[in-house]
Image 1 (cartoon, rainbow, N blue to C red):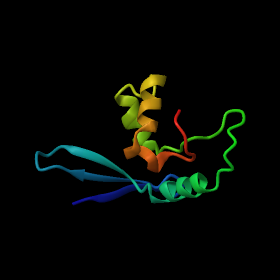
Image 2: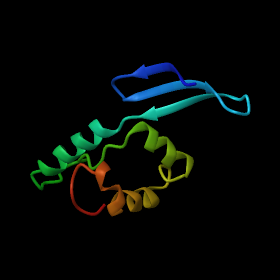
Image 3: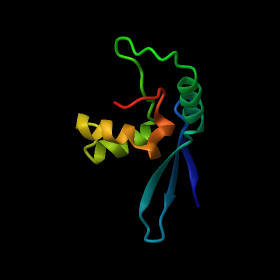
Image 4: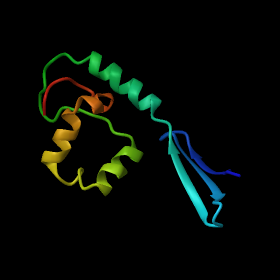
Length: 99
């Protein structure tokens, strides 16, 4: 049985506490990323086409960021660019183009 441990409305992160079938205590973290995806889509569709200095090109939810961090992608600029340019990750982009 899951029990609510904490909820952060700003990040969409909810944590649940439960005991596994093996008797292990677990805190499960879940993030609702729908609002981030919708915000990214609006930003992507409203770009004027000019890049300027240091334009925002993506917005990545914390849960995805930590997953990328654990894989070493965040710390490797070439791999991060490749990941951001992948069509499967377009939901995180806030503007078109290739990095």
